Length: 324
Image (cartoon, rainbow, N blue to C red; front, top):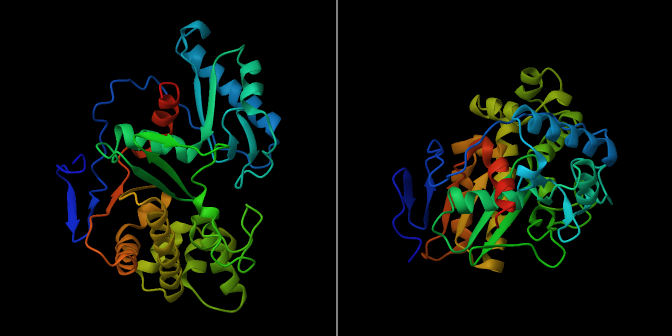
């Protein structure tokens, strides 16, 4: 079986394993990262100015490394968006709400003098990277689980990325669990998984409880309820704060149900976790594993792994778009 021969740095339990989070290596990746530039996204920008700025940054990198357009295989891009893949059109972006109904690929190709552009969802890009170069190597089927500001999945079936008919297969964080109840998400629904357990949404639940009069160390740690982030949840959790413990338990409960539902639908037994919530570590993930195993109720192996490629997964995955 392709799934045997798990490498060193893996801790097994009765139904699977966690990979050592510190094993970050670029094994078998022959490409070389020539340079990078990190620029924060401005949520106030409309689509046109946003992609104007992106094109400007791309040209700057090309010129910095003395490259010519004819030397380029193309530009691979991952966006946190619903994307009509074949057209390269962004339908909506839940965390950058002003970028929607926009022909991004066509627009960028004009800005880049006709260079090839492939645009895909950022979780799809991460799934490609981790399956080919990271924690999912050797698995014929894999689900990459983005657990960060948002919640999403990238699905690999028979060693191929599954995009679905229109291109956004894997937007499973927006599956509904309590329709019409709870906090409204950027998907414009109330009651999706993401609205309960993503990094951006759990702090909204915390602020609501503070507004209702509950006390928490997180207010002191952050300076004000509006400044609370996932980092403050971790810090308060370590100091025994009851609201932080409640928040982590809510995240674990909903993430475990989300994973169990994915397992039932797809019967894929390799889940690779990446994103900011991975930093919760033992505060969160053993509880997710415990709940998942309770729901699952059989001894067939299901592997839970941490992503291996660190902050470069987006770059690696975007490059893989040009070769897949």
